Image (cartoon, rainbow, N blue to C red; front, side):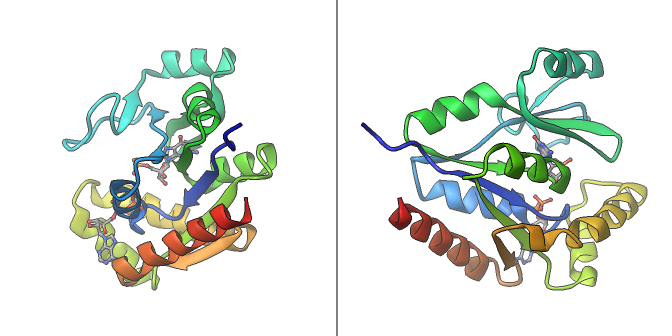
Length: 189
Ligand code: ADP
Ligand code: 5GP
């Protein structure tokens, strides 16, 4: 029988480069995908419903919580975010690996619920760089950037709870480090 796939948790503060890293990781492997989360936050111009997120109203999201549809969910900066559990299990059962690109509260819940999950924290080289990445991305207002940097302080304080910490300074180095972590996990199976 085929082995089950590996569940990876990839977290880190907003703007650190999680999305950029994930896109590079999945582009190289057909048996690795990023779970599509549900959220109540407003779509950005680059978002596509069902591709980057499943966009939900607050009522729809709360119904999903009460129907036990999430592996984990959390409130981040006033919006709900959650990982639909069925899609993740389906891919793992097919032997595919899945990345959850999620914030820290949700990550801690998955670590508890799925002790075999491999957790990776992406850290910025320093706080000024994180600010500049958020500012240059241009997807949030100054007020939202301030809130995200405030949340980042708490998130960074939890990095030692993860199996691995990778600093995203040079993007190709960070991607390569994660690919090595993934290769080592496969060899352990
Ligand atoms: P997150 O998904 O963690 O919120 P993004 O992937 O959206 O972060 O990255 C935030 C911004 O930083 C983007 O504009 C991205 O192009 C840029 N970025 C990501 N990694 C690096 C890096 N290593 N060096 C410079 N810029 C980066
Ligand atoms: P953004 O609004 O920038 O897309 O995401 C904000 C934060 O929510 C990011 O740290 C992102 O990783 C996190 N996030 C995205 N999806 C989920 C999810 O399903 N669960 C949790 N807990 N966090 C998520």
